[in-house]
Length: 245
Ligand SMILES: N[C@@H](CCC(=O)N[C@@H](CS)C(=O)NCC(=O)O)C(=O)O
Image 1 (cartoon, rainbow, N blue to C red):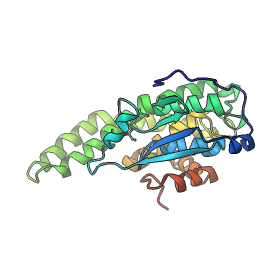
Image 2: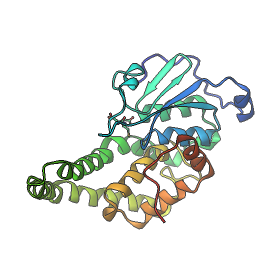
Image 3: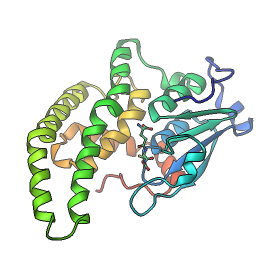
């Protein structure tokens, strides 16, 4: 959601050197262990200067109330760019690429539709299943011990009927798509679809690794090995979704 109309959107890429000299305009409101890591990775790849305002999750995992002062939903990521505030990671990724993108983020013409699809699929279709699986796995251990077996039984049944079969379809589709592609839009560099799919697949491997195929694992490795990704990690701090060797 863009809460103020973006002003002076620049469609022509700025040279990284001139950006280094410019005053830092972009602030990323970054929550530890969260999908705002997407935004840091993108800004590092684009070589756009930015600053980070860090927020720490409360013990139950929620974002702290200070984020509500930046955007009415109080979730991360949110960016401010001068007078402009943008929330929702898909909107942020599109906004930043539209304003600061260069040939490094251009979508090949043959991959336009894939890019569009995976931009929306990440948060729209796959993420809700992963979030549900994560929540269901966290509820039983947080309940009184005598309720745990019953809750585990109920959630396992729900998983068997609902999420399990869906995850198999998601995994098959992604594995097939990545069969002959390095990046989701098919070119030789990440595009907006990758900045969005990256976190979602990291989350996939963290929550339901048993459903992931080898190409999903390779893809996440490929992302995490990029220098810009590593730099984003150094700047962002605590991140729970790194692949374990
Ligand atoms: N669809 C939104 C989801 C935002 C979201 O749920 N962010 C999480 C971090 S990964 C959050 O702020 N969680 C803390 C909370 O909901 O209190 C986006 O892509 O930006």
